[in-house]
Length: 241
Image (cartoon, rainbow, N blue to C red; front, side, top):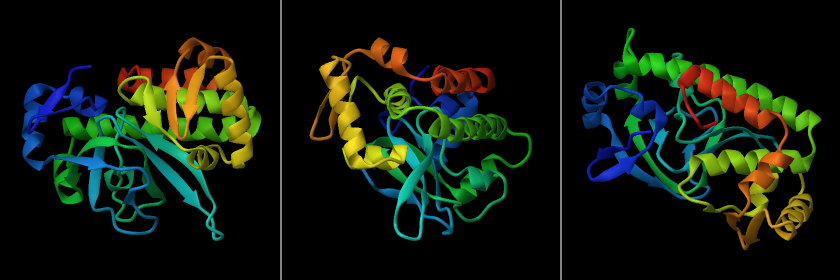
């Protein structure tokens, strides 16, 4: 996937890189290169959406929050897509809270600029609409996965999805965050991470995760990883999921 440069920075966002150069260049004045840190909110449930984010190497987590403060991940967004789907279909408010799960960089634009860029049958509108379909497919598959598959399978799927979206084999991820993402208690995550580490599949220490044996993760993972990956490839021509 080609790398696009903005103000001296590179961004490998798949949606932006799928645009023709002249189409991308027309968006450049409206794009701002920003960094996001772990747990930083980019959108809050039922609050106005201010910016559209196109992750470069960061990963965002869409969270469904309960009244008691518990949270469960219902979707993830990386360099295969963008945050702000609601604005694409005319929504003004965020349906869920979205936070940065793996720190990194994004290109962002104001909602007003995004609406202008997607008004009518524009290239950006067409590619973001296809992403919307792929995202909905991922959410549906995740619901089935969380109901039917073991924590080991889901852990593998989630780590593979994150690995696809970051640069290199290392990223920061706490057990507390993993527990929220998988909808389980922290001790369960600790047991799985320990078993995977003993098997030589990952290294994990104080939130620092390193992928040692990706093939091992793929062997343990359920069918949902490849199903979502195929869906993204069909709709976007993407190798990411």
